Figure 1 (cartoon, rainbow, N blue to C red):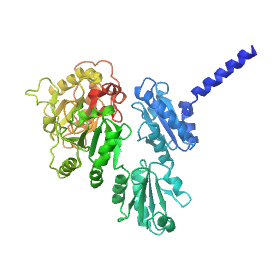
Figure 2: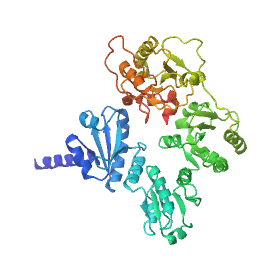
Figure 3: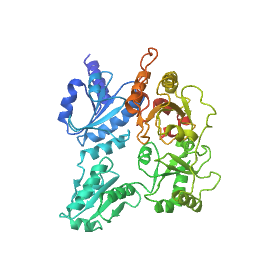
Figure 4: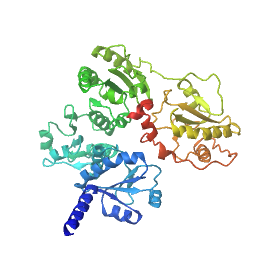
Length: 508
């Protein structure tokens, strides 16, 4: 009996070890105390049924274990049980991640949802915007991340210190920043104050800035130097490239050897265009469907294309031509000079608009959506998207209500098949609904509420120029889930991922 008892205890102990977690699960009665007791906490607000939350779980666990030794805590809150707590913190979709420095200092987590990215982001959050660096700590500071940025300044040079600090405050989520006033250390590093050195574990290892110390110039230099000359485009880097503010040149190839070979061939072009165009390789076997999103054939590699990320314009290189240094150099030079016309994928303009919802295609997008005299509510949809199909009858009724109202010439309810037409916006999930107000087309508002007719009417009335409100003709069926629960701007909806072959960019 005693032996059986020992075996049972052993099994219980093994189970405890197997299920041990470094992520702390919090409830309403433990949340405040936990946040107060820890200087830095990353909290995930989740729902057990959420597919994105399930995908995040192992990454979150791995990051929690890595960050434990640095005394950075990761917590999670089940919003199906802790409804009040989640509402208190403004949770509208899952997962929502927030960084807490006490209860009164809360900000959104802005990094990728991978273990390495979570670890890197939270280590940066644990550091001051600018850390003091000495000869004894420099080498350790260089290891803080893949990219660290250090300014070498004279102690009396307040202007240079302030300019550098301003950049550090802006980019603290991206890179660790350090400063040294030790002239001997600067000399040992091969620079003379004032100077900025970007230390990195790729390319040439470090880049040096010695121009006039102005915040804007330092920021531009830092972001350029911190981007690999020819990086790798994938799930962990895609959004960074999209938000970099520079055109992105893609090198598609099916093998690592071929990607390396083409990269070496095109390296002189990337060096010449550094700070003007970002270059990256992409695995055509894993992410070949993304070629279609750039108006390339998805079965002919290697291939090359440039995407103007700010306008979501595509410039595919002729796939019938060989990728050579001279051919790509001429293509890139022409692109920079504005001599290459963007490739526009568009359905034909409808001969007649049938039904209350206005059909938009790429060729009439500007004429309809950017008509400055009208408030335009537009749905970006995919034909295979189940959420879009569920929304369709309500969206038709919404359009009918406006078409029969006094606002029929001031409000347009429109839709566009974003898989068949190039649109200026980079759409991350379906359906995405945006309002382009009259007189403020550069200030489009993305809808994130429940997909009910009443809520959509309120959205148009609150955000449009004409404050156009109409009345429903009949009581509406039960409310649909909130938009952010199904398709958030941060991550594609689960359905878009399942249909990745058709969703093109959603694979990334």
